[in-house]
Image (cartoon, rainbow, N blue to C red):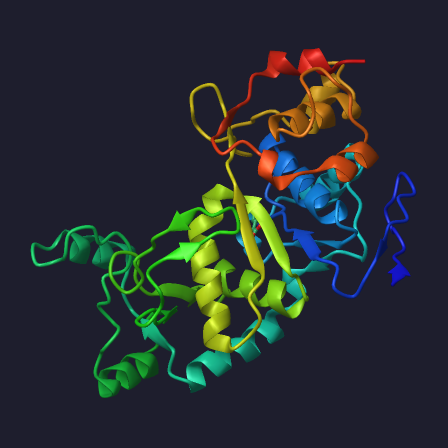
Length: 332
Ligand code: GLU
C-alpha cells in the first residue's frame, strides 16, 4: 500500500491504494470546448475511480490533427480542473505516439490480420445497396477482403489510395459491457472489418485508443454509451494483439430537450457558458452529480462527497435530458 501524490489536487484526498487499485482515464479530443455531457462523463469516470482509491489519468486524443482546434486542449484541462477533477500524471498525447501505433500495426500485418482496402466511400455505398447483399449489412461489405495478392501488389505499387482494415472474421458477435448492456456488432456480417490505418496515413481511433488504454495499464474505461460499439471493436483489436483488455463501462448520455445528444459543434452549454450565467463550478458539478443519480435534487456536492459515495449502480439506465433551468436548483 502507498499513498499517491495528487498532482492537480484542489483538495487533499490522500486516499491509500494498493497495486490492485483500478486505473481509470478520461480521454478528450481537443476539438472544441467540453460540453456538459463530456464533463458529466469525465466526472463519472473520475468518481468511479477515486471512490475505490484508484489512479486516474488523462489522455489527449489529438491524433486526428485536421479536427484539432487551437487552444482547446488548454481550455479543456482548465475546465476539468475547475470542476474539481484531478489526475495523477502529466497527460499523454496521442500525437506523440505514432511510432507505438506503427509497431502494433506491423504486428497485425505480419499476422495477416489487416489488409489494404481500396474502396472509396461511394464504392462502399454502392456495394451496400447491391441486391445480393445480406439484409442488415451496414458497415463494410468486405469487397477488398479477399483480393488476389497479385492485384494487391500491383495496386500498392501504383500508389492507389487505400486504408487498412482489421479482419473481423472470427470475432465474437456480441459484446457485453461492464453495465451489462449487450451490443451486437455482428462482426464480419453487418458491421464488418474496420479501419485501423486511414487513407490519409493517420492511425484510426480504434487502434490508437485500444493500444493506449492497454499499454497505459488502464484497467477500466468509463465513457459514454455512444462508444459502446467501440468497446466491441477495441476488445477485438486487443485480442488480435494479445494485449490485456480493460473493463469497458458505457453510461447513457445526456441529451438536449430535442432528444439529440449534446455536441461541441452545436454550441451546447459548456462550463464557460454556465459561469457567464452566474452559476458556480460547485453548482454545475452538483447538477451533473444529480443527473448521475449520485446526489439528491438541489443538494450541493463536494468532490470528496462524490468520491466517497459514488455508486455505479445508481447511474440512470436511460438518457438524461439536459434542461438548463434545472441547474438553478443547485445554486448556493
Ligand atoms: N476522444 C473521444 C471523445 O472525446 C473519447 C474516446 C474514449 O473515451 O474512448 O469523444
